[in-house]
Amino acid sequence: MPVTLQTVSGQQVLPWLDAVAALRIEVFRDFPYLYDGELDYERRYLAAYAQSPASLFVLAVEGDQVVGASTGIPLGDAEAEFQAPFIEQGIPLDRVFYFGESVLQRDYRGHGLGHRFFDEREAFARQLGKPITAFCAVERPDNHPLKPAGYTPLDAFWQARGYTKQPAMRTLYHWQDIGEASATDKPMVFWLKGPGLKEWGHA
Image (cartoon, rainbow, N blue to C red; front, side, top):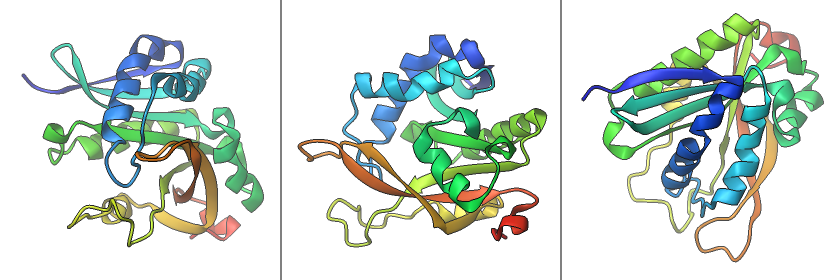
């Protein structure tokens, strides 16, 4: 059965919150996120998407199963941790559409869905008049004990999509790793794409 993409926005995301939460818990358990997920945390995190009238879920659906999801939200509606680096750099929040995550079950990777997730979110951002798209990614040390042999980060994929890593734009986000007794802050670094970034020194 072919995988189809569905897009929902604003309050339309509500029926899909549990499916996206389950995917986040499944996919982010792997390195580099190592997320020891639980539903109460997920409900708090995803609440912002249900509350924003211009949020976006791009859902990869096979039959009646959601096998992948990609999210976005105007940065002004995102959590303070994600806004802070832009405020510090003088980049207006109302110019930015923030990409939350792309999560895809392992068997469906390598077939172009990652590119389609970016295509859909970037097109949605343009429709909203948001010229800058951005996301952040966790940073782990190269010698992390749970790093798999042969692990390849997604940097080359993101660069091919036109995104530039911004080492000066960082935030901390709180979650519990596998094996941790409680949640701790994790360092996250931002990647940006869009015209006008040179204005703020982010070519």
